[in-house]
Structures are given as C-alpha cells and as structure tokens.
Image (cartoon, rainbow, N blue to C red; front, side):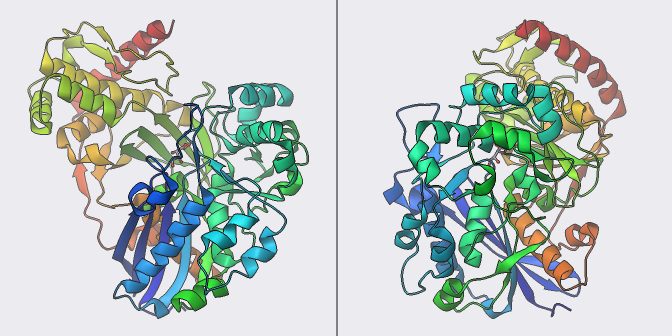
Length: 526
Ligand code: XUL
C-alpha cells in the first residue's frame, strides 16, 4: 500500500525543453505540487540550438544533442532539490519524450551507464558511450528515398501501414536508421543499441538499457501492432543486423528499474521506481484524461493535432494518420496539421486585429460563413500533403476581415473532423489544450463542427502530467494494488473543466459544409 504523501515525478523531454511535474498522492486523490521547465536554447546555450535543434546547412536535416538532453536531466534534478519538496517521499518517476528521435550507443554503454560516478557531471561520462554524437529528431525530412525503399521492400506502403500503423514517414525512426547505416556504415557497425529519446533517458536514470514501450515504438515503422513485437520484414528492410541493436520491448505500465546510485548519491534521493518511459503524444493522452474510445483530444498549438483512444488499431487507408499504442494497453490514432496557430496569426495580423477583435469577428459572422470557404495552407501542410503552400478561397471576399477570420477557424475545425474520421470513433467529448484553447469562440466552432461537448482543461504540460500519472499507475500496479485508468485521471484535483455544448442547428450546417470543404480540398489537390 502506497503511503499518503507519496510523490510522483513526471518528466517531458520535448523538442525545446525539459519539464517536470510532481504529483502528491493522498487518500486516492492527487495534486500537482511542483512544475518546472528548462528551455534548452536559454538554459544550455553552449549547445547552440535554435528551438532545441542544432544548426545544419541542409534545411531537411533536424538533429539534436543527446548529451544536451542528459545535461538538462542533471540540471533539472539539481533544481528540484532546491524546491521545498520532501524528495525522500519520491516513490516513482516516469517520462515522456518527443517521438521518433533516436540515440546511438556503443558496446561500452551498458557498463558505462551502470557505473556513472556521482561526483562527476554527466556529459563527459555519456559522450564516450555514443556511437553517433547527434540524434535525428522528428522535424527531420531528409529520408524520402529511404521511406520508399522500405515500403517497396515490405510489399508497399499499405502493407507497412497495416503492420506498423503508418506508411513510411521521413521523421519515423526506421527510415532515419536506414539513412545513418548507409551514410556512416562504420559508425553504424559500432552501434550496439539504438534507443528512442524516451528509452535513452530512462536508461540514464536506471543505469542500464531500458526497454522501449509499444506506444513510442509504434513511431518507428518497425513494430507490429498486432503482436506488439518487432516486425521482421520491416527490421530486415531497414538496415543490416538491426534486430540485435533494438532494445527490448515492455509496456509503459511496467517498472524499468530503480533510480541508479548516480542519482541517489548525487541528489540524496531514495531508490524510487522508474516506470518505462513513453512518447509525448501517448503521455499527453493520459495527461488530458483520455482513457476510452469516444473521447478525443485536440491540441491547438504551433501545429494542430487531433488524437484519441481506439479500442482496435484501425489504420488510415488515406495514409495521413498514424496508429500508436496507448498507455492503457489499447491504441491511439493521431493526425498532425502544420498550419495551426501560425495560420490563425497570419489572418489576425493581415487584418490588423487583436485576439479580442478576432473573437468579435467570429461573433459577428454566421456559422457556415454564408458559404465562404478557405483552404488555410499558409505553410507546407502535412495533412493533406501540400508541398507548395498557398491560401485558396471559394465564395469568400479577401477584403472582408470578419469572413476571413471565420473561414480560417471553420477550415481548421472542419479539417480536424474530416481527417480524423479514419479513426472510426463516435466522438462524444473533446478535451482541448494549447494556446488557442483560451478562445471560447473557437471552441464553440469546434463543438458545433463535431457535434460534441468540448472541455477545456487547464493542465499546463499535458505530457509531463501524463508521465506523472503513469508513474502513479505503474507504482500501484507493481504493488499489486492497481488503480483503474479512470481512477488515475479522475483523481486529479486541480482540473477545472469548462464545458461548451454544441448548438444542434449549427452542427447541421457544418455537416453539409464538411462535404463541400472536402470537395474543395480534393479539387485544389488535383
Ligand atoms: C508525432 C510527432 C510529434 C512529436 C513532437 O508523430 O512527430 O508530435 O512527438 O514532440
């Protein structure tokens, strides 16, 4: 039985920062008692990153430094130690990390991780364990040829998607590994283990190679969703001798180990459990309280994302969405759009509006916008794939500010609905997060387009919170005193859900508009 006052730490190593959320659990309820964030560019300037990415002459290449991530981890524990928290009560830790990125370790790593010296800083101890000094990350788009080669070798994009949940994507780990093996064969041969960012950081915490969980593992184009094991045809198609270099697999509800002596001695920490780490999207699913099919998450940030639990791994025949494992043991579908807040800001700025003015424009215009439509492709789009950006209008006067505001919002909410239909989920509630979630008028359009209730959750960092909740869940499971996922997410005290209900007459307008929008999109794509 976990004592009252147990602390659970959730970490999130994202593209731009390392964040932490500490939960205190008492009497079946838990509350956030500490939140911290270290932005890489500002905190660890000596790596010279911009938005967490190392400069590179090739715009298609996006890499970061694994050593920067471990230095951030060390710094974060030192900052935590300065807080007025009784870290003697730290019971379990878990983590979330940007998906798809990979870290390449040599055969000295297992021993090196086990014997990290607590009196010395981490970076110089980790550098000799790497067979590749840099880690390719999810923003990389340099592996187009490798994607096609892998798809061809396994029998086509559809076959790969049916098994792994996605056709080959440039940012996914398999194509990245193939490119490395081809361009740097000697360094690839010297690689003993290829970790995801999540399993790498878990390894540093436990002092040995930690497993990959099937949720983050399904962002690799290597894992068979039906068996939750590595899929031999994809592994063989990716790179020579790859199977031996892949980590073990274990559910994200399992315990990977205990905090290693390095952390215990350096920061006077107890032998806390370390639950298997996962990807940021699966962790956010839990942080947003999405634990059953019918609930949908919408993140309105730099990019807009729609995701939600699925009982079965139904794959997108259109090839745009992804199926990942979910921490609950089921699955999740996700579709990512690159024209998120940027498109909203472009419209706001081009008509000289403030956000209040933007909201007033939504209030002043009718649902359906009198038939006016916009395709909001201000930058290259992922969903649908639009390489040459450009805004298209239909029945919409470019000089009518209010109509253009409504058009961009309706277009985005309609695209979220249209391109998540492949998940085959009957949506009853949407949990929304991200900067634009503060705008009630946008949320009303979202509720009306989907015909579903919208709840706006004040969760701060959903991925780090999700990791902390997963640590709690894994700890109780390990103690043979399991909590249901509903109890885990409903036990959180500080949620202040604001519920917006759909207006049924508006929903009817949007059902018809979705067809017209889809038709406009198809025509624009030729
Ligand atoms: C998902 C994806 C991003 C990263 C961001 O497929 O590429 O959401 O996980 O951290």
